[in-house]
Amino acid sequence: MSESDQNDALHKAVLDIAEVPAIEVIVEVAVNLMSAAAIKCGLAEGPDATSLTDLDEARKLINALAGLVTATAPDISDSHARPLRDGLRSLQLAFREASPIPDEIGKGPGEKWTGPVN
Image (cartoon, rainbow, N blue to C red):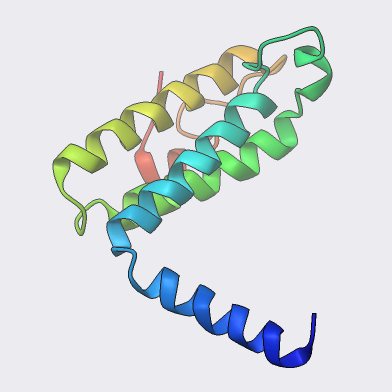
């Protein structure tokens, strides 16, 4: 691919993303964080689900998700924010259940932004 073709492709990608409403980008990112966190919490299906569990990685993903959801909730409609908050809470509970040494209430992943989850 020539440099001109690469520049054209980059320009098209920038124009494509510019047409996407912010709420769609936010929800897409949140869903990707949720999916990754669910896998890392051991919620994947299949014979290798256990080997994909990584609670350290799950904690980072849940923290990022909690920050995103908390920061954007005032700017997105309740119909978008509510399912994101519900999914986040489910992941926080799944993390607590999967952890061999559970965090104190209020000290789990994302609880800095969401408040205690139990």
